[in-house]
Length: 110
Image (cartoon, rainbow, N blue to C red; front, side, top):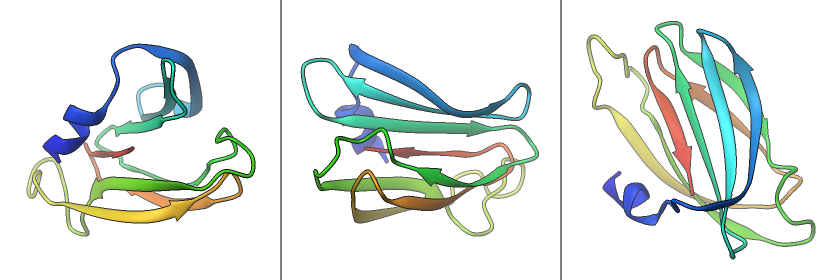
Protein backbone atom coordinates (compact mmCIF):
# COMPACT_ATOMS: atom_id res chain seq x y z
CA UNK A 1 0.00 0.00 0.00
CA UNK A 2 2.98 2.32 0.38
CA UNK A 3 3.31 2.22 -3.41
CA UNK A 4 0.26 4.49 -3.67
CA UNK A 5 1.98 7.07 -1.44
CA UNK A 6 5.03 6.92 -3.70
CA UNK A 7 2.92 7.25 -6.87
CA UNK A 8 0.38 9.91 -5.88
CA UNK A 9 1.05 13.41 -7.20
CA UNK A 10 1.22 16.53 -5.05
CA UNK A 11 0.25 19.08 -7.74
CA UNK A 12 -3.06 18.84 -9.59
CA UNK A 13 -4.56 20.14 -12.85
CA UNK A 14 -8.07 19.17 -11.84
CA UNK A 15 -10.02 18.00 -8.78
CA UNK A 16 -13.55 16.58 -8.71
CA UNK A 17 -15.67 15.50 -5.78
CA UNK A 18 -17.57 12.44 -6.97
CA UNK A 19 -19.61 11.68 -3.85
CA UNK A 20 -19.88 13.18 -0.41
CA UNK A 21 -22.08 13.33 2.66
CA UNK A 22 -20.76 15.56 5.45
CA UNK A 23 -19.66 13.54 8.46
CA UNK A 24 -20.05 10.24 6.59
CA UNK A 25 -17.80 9.94 3.51
CA UNK A 26 -16.07 11.77 0.67
CA UNK A 27 -14.80 10.45 -2.67
CA UNK A 28 -12.49 12.70 -4.70
CA UNK A 29 -10.70 12.29 -8.05
CA UNK A 30 -7.64 14.33 -8.95
CA UNK A 31 -5.67 14.60 -12.18
CA UNK A 32 -1.92 14.96 -11.71
CA UNK A 33 -0.47 18.18 -13.09
CA UNK A 34 0.92 17.87 -16.62
CA UNK A 35 -0.13 14.21 -17.04
CA UNK A 36 -3.15 12.06 -17.88
CA UNK A 37 -2.90 10.23 -14.55
CA UNK A 38 -5.89 10.27 -12.22
CA UNK A 39 -5.98 9.35 -8.53
CA UNK A 40 -9.16 8.58 -6.57
CA UNK A 41 -9.48 8.54 -2.80
CA UNK A 42 -12.31 7.75 -0.39
CA UNK A 43 -12.50 8.10 3.35
CA UNK A 44 -15.46 6.91 5.39
CA UNK A 45 -16.76 7.44 8.91
CA UNK A 46 -17.59 4.68 11.37
CA UNK A 47 -20.62 3.91 9.17
CA UNK A 48 -18.58 2.86 6.11
CA UNK A 49 -19.74 3.54 2.55
CA UNK A 50 -20.79 1.53 -0.51
CA UNK A 51 -21.24 2.88 -4.01
CA UNK A 52 -21.00 2.24 -7.72
CA UNK A 53 -18.19 4.56 -8.72
CA UNK A 54 -18.50 5.98 -12.26
CA UNK A 55 -15.19 6.70 -13.96
CA UNK A 56 -16.74 9.05 -16.54
CA UNK A 57 -14.14 11.72 -15.70
CA UNK A 58 -11.44 9.66 -17.48
CA UNK A 59 -10.40 10.61 -21.03
CA UNK A 60 -12.90 9.19 -23.51
CA UNK A 61 -11.64 6.30 -25.65
CA UNK A 62 -8.55 5.73 -23.53
CA UNK A 63 -7.77 2.57 -21.56
CA UNK A 64 -6.16 2.80 -18.13
CA UNK A 65 -4.76 0.24 -15.73
CA UNK A 66 -6.19 0.97 -12.29
CA UNK A 67 -4.46 -0.19 -9.14
CA UNK A 68 -7.12 -0.42 -6.42
CA UNK A 69 -6.16 -0.35 -2.73
CA UNK A 70 -9.33 -1.26 -0.83
CA UNK A 71 -10.53 -2.50 2.53
CA UNK A 72 -10.59 -6.30 2.71
CA UNK A 73 -13.70 -8.21 3.77
CA UNK A 74 -13.87 -8.03 7.55
CA UNK A 75 -11.92 -4.78 7.78
CA UNK A 76 -13.07 -2.45 10.57
CA UNK A 77 -11.34 0.49 12.23
CA UNK A 78 -11.75 -1.04 15.71
CA UNK A 79 -11.18 -4.75 15.17
CA UNK A 80 -9.25 -5.24 11.92
CA UNK A 81 -7.82 -1.89 10.75
CA UNK A 82 -4.95 -3.23 8.64
CA UNK A 83 -6.93 -5.57 6.37
CA UNK A 84 -6.70 -4.46 2.75
CA UNK A 85 -6.47 -5.80 -0.79
CA UNK A 86 -4.62 -4.62 -3.87
CA UNK A 87 -6.09 -5.43 -7.30
CA UNK A 88 -5.36 -4.34 -10.85
CA UNK A 89 -8.04 -3.79 -13.44
CA UNK A 90 -8.34 -2.32 -16.94
CA UNK A 91 -10.80 0.60 -16.93
CA UNK A 92 -12.24 3.25 -19.28
CA UNK A 93 -14.56 6.23 -18.92
CA UNK A 94 -17.49 3.78 -19.18
CA UNK A 95 -16.36 1.62 -16.24
CA UNK A 96 -18.35 1.46 -13.01
CA UNK A 97 -16.63 0.02 -9.96
CA UNK A 98 -18.58 -1.44 -7.04
CA UNK A 99 -16.64 -0.08 -4.09
CA UNK A 100 -17.01 -0.65 -0.37
CA UNK A 101 -15.24 1.31 2.35
CA UNK A 102 -15.29 -0.44 5.72
CA UNK A 103 -16.33 1.44 8.86
CA UNK A 104 -13.56 3.98 9.45
CA UNK A 105 -11.88 2.87 6.22
CA UNK A 106 -11.59 3.93 2.63
CA UNK A 107 -9.89 3.18 -0.64
CA UNK A 108 -7.42 4.64 -3.10
CA UNK A 109 -7.09 4.11 -6.85
CA UNK A 110 -4.14 5.05 -9.02
